[in-house]
Amino acid sequence: MQLPVYKIDGTDSGKKVTLEDGVFAIQPNDHAIYLDVVQYLANQRHGNSKTKDRSEIAHSTKKLGRQKGGGGARHGSLKANIFVGGGRVFGPVPRFYHNKLNKKVKALARKSALSYKAAEQAIIMVEPFTMEAPKTKQMLSILSAIKAGDRKVLVVLPENSTNIYLSSRNLPQVNVLSVDEINTYAIMNANSLVLVDGVQDVLAERNMR
Image 1 (tube, rainbow, N blue to C red):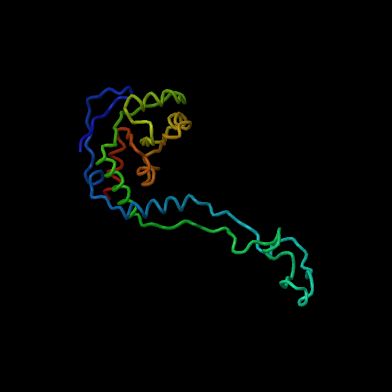
Image 2: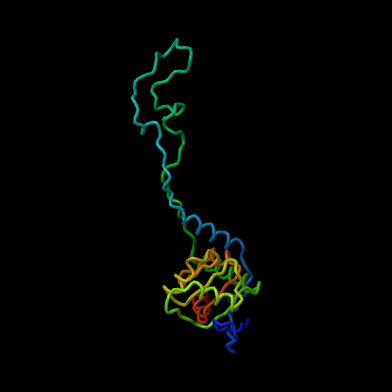
C-alpha cells in the first residue's frame, strides 16, 4: 500500500511511502484487539478506593441495650452498618487491577488496529517537522492543512518532542505519542492517524518480529 507524504502546509512533497503489508494489511484479529484494549484500560486503574468496615470505625463498643426484651433487634455497638456513621459492609478495598498479555498477542492487536485504519484510509503521512516553541494555533493550522479532521486525531512521532506535545495539550481531540508509546487503544480510539515519515519503518521493524 502506497501513500503520499504531505508537507505541513498541506502540499504534496512528491514522495510516496510503501506501508508494509505484514503490519498495515493483515486480516484483523478482533479478539486480540479486545484483549489488548481491556488490558490497557485495566492497567490505567489505580485501585485506591477504600471504605472503613466496622472493625475500623472509631466508636464505643458499649452494648446499646440488653440482649432481650427491648422490642427490637439485638445490637452490640454503634459500629454496626445500619447506624449512621457505622462501618460499610463489603465496601471497596485497595486492589491491583493489572493483568498480563503475551507480547505476540499485543503485537497482533497493534497490527490489526493499524490494518483497520489503513483499510479505512484514515492514515495520513507527513514530512518530519519541528516546532521552535509551543504554538497551539500552529498545530491547528498543520492539522487543518493536511486535512486530518477535527475529531480524535492521533499524531505519531519518531521520537518525543516537547514543543509538539505542548502545542497539542490544549486540544482535547488531539493526542500526540512517540512511536515507542503507541498502543492499540490509542489507535482504535482515533478517527485519523497522522504518521510522521519514518514511523512506518519503525512499526514494520518492531511488529514483523
